[in-house]
Every structure is written in structure tokens, then in C-alpha cells.
Image (tube, rainbow, N blue to C red; front, side):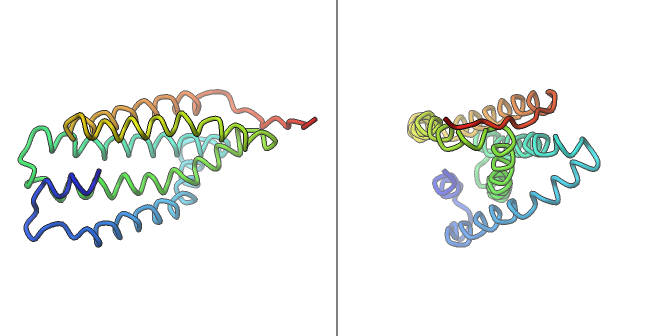
Length: 180
């Protein structure tokens, strides 16, 4: 959605899509690199080492929700050309969160999903995930852009709440499952 959104804002000189794409890919890379220092900071200053990944995920979801609220507000309530830099920065932040979420997801998956069933469990979620992607793509054709960004921001808030409930629960040991 970033290309049509930025193009609709008519910045002076146009949108350098190649440079924007490169910046977004760098943000993903930096997000992945920041995972270990973030988890160490969370483990030493906020919670125990056992819950550091869960709290890191809450942080990533809250940051993603805030970044997606920027285009929702800018496209809804202000002159689009005034907010170009803010919207572009919000896209960089969301891509940073995408990069951050990959190692967080891997850590949480290895912590909560038994090794013997990881492949099967991950495959079960492919169809619902694809349905969400198709619905989101359809939403961009049907709704105004600011509504879609608001919806995405709300979904990130819901993810943060669900993740916080996992983070505040009792620590659990990963159970070993024997294959027959």
C-alpha cells in the first residue's frame, strides 16, 4: 500500500520509489539486528529473561500500531502533501517492526510449539493467514486508505493486548512430545 499512498500525496519532485524501497528493506534488516539488544534490555530492565521475548513482541506491536495510525490520521484529517515525511517515516517504522518480528516469532515458536509438531502447526495457519492477506488486499480496493490504515492499526493494538496476556501469564516449560 505504500506506493499508492505516497504517490497520492504528490510530493515535490515525485516519489523516488527505488530509494523508498531501499530504505524500507534497510529498516527490515535493522529491525532484525536490533532484536538481541532489545531483548537484553527488556530482560535486564523490565522483566525476567524467560519473558523477554514476550515483552519485546508487545513493544513491537505497540510501535507498529502507532506507526500505522500516522497515515490513518494524516490521510483522514490533514492535507496529504503536508504529511509526506511523517507518512514515509511511519512506513519505515512499520518495516522496522516487520524485521523485529521475525526473530521474535522464531524465539516464541521455539518456546511454545513442540518441535515434533512445528511443521504441522505452522501449515495449519497458512490458510487463515492467506485469507487475511486476501481480505486486506480487497479492503484496499473497497475502503478509503485512511480506513484501511486505521483497521491495521487497530489489529496491531489487538495483537499487543493478546501478546501482553501471554507475557503476563505464568512461565511455561516447553513440553517434549514423543512421536509414535
